Amino acid sequence: MTVDAHPADRHPVSADSYNMCPGGRGGNQALASARMGVKTAIVGMVGEDPMGQKLLDKLRSEGVLTSGVGRSEKNTGCNCIPIDQDDEPRIYQAMGANGDSSADQIPDEILNDATMLVLQMELPEEENYKLMQRAKERGAKILLNLAPMKMIPRKFLTMIDYLVINQLEAREIARTTEMVRDNNAVMIAQGLSKEGDLTCIVTLGGKGSIAVEPNGKVWTVGALLISEEVSVEDRWGASDAYCGTLAACLYQDMSMGDSLARASVAASLSCRAAGGQPSFAYSDDVDKALVDFPPASLVDVAAS
Image 1 (tube, rainbow, N blue to C red):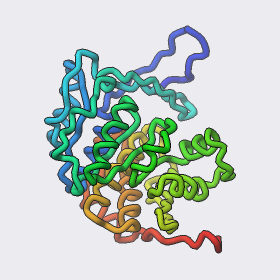
Image 2 (cartoon, rainbow, N blue to C red):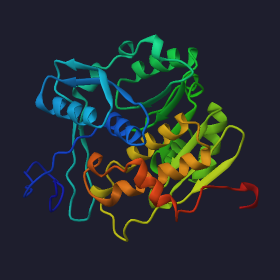
Image 3 (cartoon, rainbow, N blue to C red):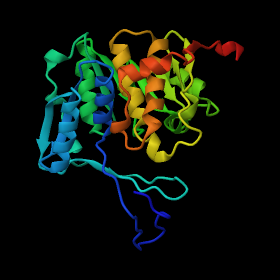
């Protein structure tokens, strides 16, 4: 919803209207992956309410397997996001049924070396960690989108293959861990890559993204210019489009450079319209946009 200004006290703030859009990081990323043509399943919890049913119906219509989604007595999780006239959002998040999600919902037989497990931090941390332990033992690849940002015990950091964070989360990690990196995304990614022996990807909004691999290679890729002015509402869900597309590309054994480029283009294309999932790109859209898009490139950090 759009408001004139965010409340400074307990007086109500009015909005002329509001939009309801299917979302949630897990659902968004699953849909983005499925639109890249990859067989994708989602596991979690929704409530016994119309909102939960609408979310599942949307994902099923896109080919996402939802048989692993359970039902909770709690209401389906949701966000309320008022945006003021300065295009500044406030996010009020209700975990709801998400809080009942359990690692036990995923059977051992689907955790193997042919599996890409994608996790976010909107579910109970301890359940994520239990699942990561089992997935690692069985050879699955693990991609963690550290959003919302929470500090991870080093034991679990070393289980991750791909860590995806945005530039604000990167700075918060550097501040919390007293990492002396001068708020430099590449340096922060290098520190996290070394600490966890993982590939760390930092998204930079309209400037694209960078990635540091365990072997020290540093990749950079730009973003596709959609418009000179992209509102907060248009950008909503772009990070999920990026993560879901990246996971799908890596699952298909694409190179790191190609995976980063496709993820960046998919995220940019999602900003064509407001509302997250409805604006997510299909694989053909990405193919067309890539024709004139500069490829990802390796960076000589020592020379930069």
